[in-house]
Image (cartoon, rainbow over all chains, first blue to last red; front, side):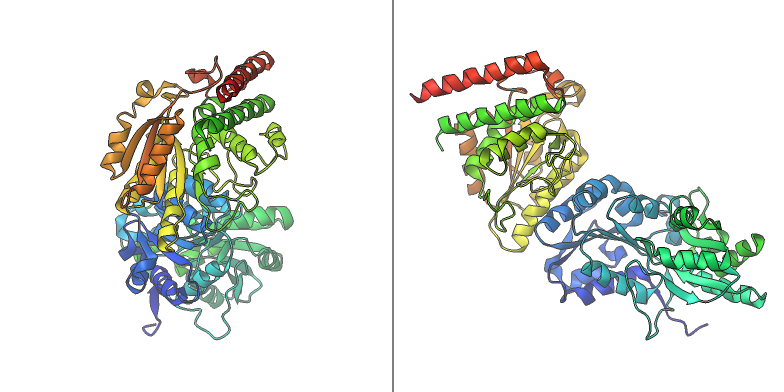
Length: 312
Length: 280
């Protein structure tokens, strides 16, 4: 296992902005005094004239981005998910969503893997908030390869995009020649006919690990990576639900309103199937190293495996 | 334009406001009327705009941060020639391109959607910043209510504008003294207004918002001022021009009935007559 490369998706985000800078001359990056943490500092160093630090004022940063977008810029606004989606919800809704402006929201430090900073900074509600905004695209990359591809795809896409990145280093598993990122297109990672595991973000890697444990018990899991929560790849979700009839959805987010809910919305209407949601169960987080929290809340491979075994 | 021409245009704008809100049976006449002279000056005299090409690249921009006074903006745009004055009667109606609050995708001439107080000024700051980043010389104007400046985001935006020396930005505060729940000093005092903007590194100018000489002088001063944004704090009368609406908080967001509409239009006809005589 020692040779598996690990990179935090926030790191990938900062690198991707630099990689895209020449191809997108209208790209500008805005921060609210967190350039060091959101890793946009990398971009700031390379393109100081295209980086604007707005100070600790996320709502104003969002409005500034809206104004810049009306003048042809493609602003990326950066903050922690708690502020980018939480504190900022109404600004994103009214100043960016309603006029459908071409602003990208790079939200880092999402979920429980914030770790030691604890509950006030661990956001489990952002996917729910952002996916209710009409016209908003919501993307949750699972590793470095996907995060960098997602940033480029967001820049190519006309309209608002919310991208969710993590603080903790996570294994890189999409580094194969066949990997292709397309907004709204899920990725079939493993074929199986007994249970479906639909996952997003850090839980994709956990789902693959759970599938290995299940395989040892003779249970074949169909594993799907949904990097785009909205628009949801309905085809791939319906196909796996019809194939296995048992769906488990895993995410580093509240079980209320996240990918699990999006899957239930779809299946309840088009292919009623039992769905078990694996995520934060209507509660706040707490301080501890990220790895310990992931384990405690059952979001690692073993945790997902245990939930599946208990619900078969 | 001469002051008299501007006064006449502003009176037409006021007629459009009253007519739009009357036909909609709802809307915000008070703050639309208090800002009618400023709206008129901006669109008839100050701003570099093209009614035939509302999205002209190098145009000056306007953001109505106090978005509820959309009738004032719409009536100005219509009278200026962006769309037919007759269409003001469709305000707030199903299928109309004149939404209750400004929508940039629907209405020709509207540069930014607004309505949630405190947000428009940030967008205006973003536009002014875009001009600076691209070395363009267009200017950006935004109009705020005096009640609106109770919103914290106004001061986040002002701090940024001052810090970044956005001298292409003019923030106008319509100080009519009234908000929904009463007088601004009773609800939660916003005073002193000019000193606050001064503290945020603005050039500040206090004027009578119904006096075109003072409006003109303030706009010229704003253009001459380099290295800092300008805040124009204009004293106005809420409901200006309609006798029974003047200085009444109750007319913040209420439409006149048939009888009231007739009185309002008679008030404005009388002003028109007086302005006609003044021109003779």
